[in-house]
Length: 51
Ligand SMILES: [Zn+2]
Image 1 (tube, rainbow, N blue to C red):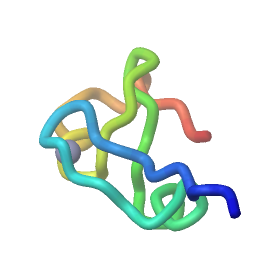
Image 2 (cartoon, rainbow, N blue to C red):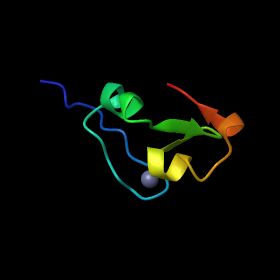
Image 3 (cartoon, rainbow, N blue to C red):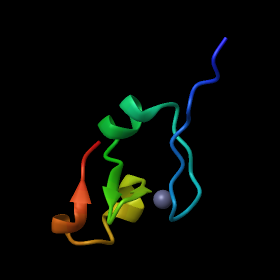
């Protein structure tokens, strides 16, 4: 049984169930680092990358 990889925010340390849910919830890569929606919203949109 493989352990699911949980995304973890590099800003606040929050985790989400999986990357699909995180993407739906608005998580983004900001300058290559994973950020939850709250943390990503502190950065300009041009820095955001979806995954
Ligand atoms: Zn965060």
